[in-house]
Image: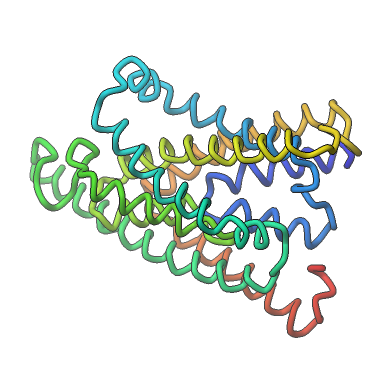
Amino acid sequence: MNTLEAIILGIIQGLTEFLPVSSSGHLALFRGLTGIYLKDMLAFDLILHIATLIPVCIIFRKTIFDLIKNPFQKLTLFLLIGTVPAVLAALLLGDQIRFLFGGGAIWFLAITFTITGFILLFADWAAERAAKIEQERREKKIIGMYDNSIKNLEQMTWREALLVGIAQAFAIPPGISRSGTTLAAALGLKFNREDAARFIFLLSIPAILGGAVFEAVELFTNDEPFFYDISLTAVAFGFAAAALSGYLAIKFFIALVKKARLRYFSIYVFALALFVVFDLLVLGGRVLT
């Protein structure tokens, strides 16, 4: 792998980790198009995951510092509860997940991208509903967030945190967007758009860390070299590309959530699903090998 390919992979990882289009699905497509298997380079995969943690920690640093200073609070508990379903799913379905992430079923992406498209349509509808309620509250000069029409994180219950966590576990397969699915769940539970986005990105921290730990264990239990067929310069550029693109993706995603413009991403993933179907049925899999 050369430096340009490392940068491209970094950008793909950074953008799609946080935009609602599925990073794992895009990496699977990239493998099919180029023949580069990121899982064959566990150390580089680990580096990219660590890089994507940086923008989350920068953008939500105030909340993270507050959690560190005051760890025994409801938000900490809810983040732990929200993480449990994904951990259980990874432990129970580990072999199946490895098969899908290893590119064992390209056709599966047509299904999961389609599912993501419908999830994003629902999220867009829920975001528009939240926007209308918030506008009505401003026009009526309603002070405080404690009513049944729309909620903030202070009103979250452990059951709602668990439901968002279940949505995150559902998004483990390649092609299903983690950020899109968890956002749809949070908005569907009638949380305001800003707090919904904040919670799902905070929830991504243990999810990304968990993936990094899993890769680290697999890396150190294998006999393969840390970085083969890739220079340290390429690794550094890939790391920087993932961190920078991840930062831009989070900012862009939050702005879109506030404007309720997620339907554009649904069109994009529907197009990807059609592309996979066209390649498999019409071209006989000549593009995606």
